[in-house]
Length: 256
Image 1 (cartoon, rainbow, N blue to C red):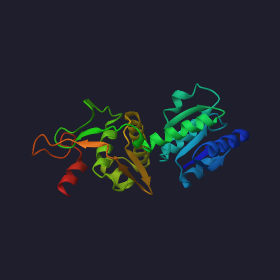
Image 2 (cartoon, rainbow, N blue to C red):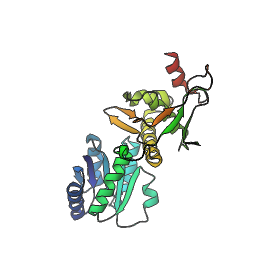
Image 3 (cartoon, one colour):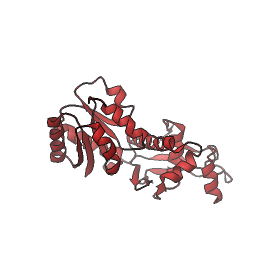
Image 4 (cartoon, one colour):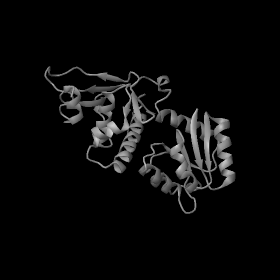
């Protein structure tokens, strides 16, 4: 059951979308807001899987609301709704999982369910098995078949290795920040972490691998669901992530 919040300034559309989500998909609407200003202080208090935001709202658009939430450290995927298509490029710059035209239909509800399943790494076991080849020692790399993975950013690659070496263990977000963003102030580090996790989830979805990153209280836990094949060391004296130079990896191997 996906928990969602809807922010829509047109009351009839607000009610229609809530009914459609709960009638035609595994959705539970946990918050309904006609004003983004009412929604802004309440969203951080609610545990949700997605936000359904209207783009064209007075005084604060859905795009501005999403950007404000990202900057404040909210790492929830956003689904934008609008009557016009010209906002699509802007929408996908602020953690947009999807972009749909109003009014919603039962078929769109089904599509949103499928998108969330892929985003959160669920039900991938029904698809053909896909694996990543990982070398952790010496010249570290991640490949799909013969092709190296193209990471969206270097910090996305680093966070993947970090989670992989802590697989199925809860990684507290403050410890992650201390290890990967040690010199970045808190108000910038949290959005960096959330945006990087968002990019990772999007990448896994594009690659078709069933890797899931779950948010648990104040931390995250990654499960690879048997989609990783570790390659043997090429040299017996090779060090953990030697070619990457991550300080936290050195401390991990040294037991510091």
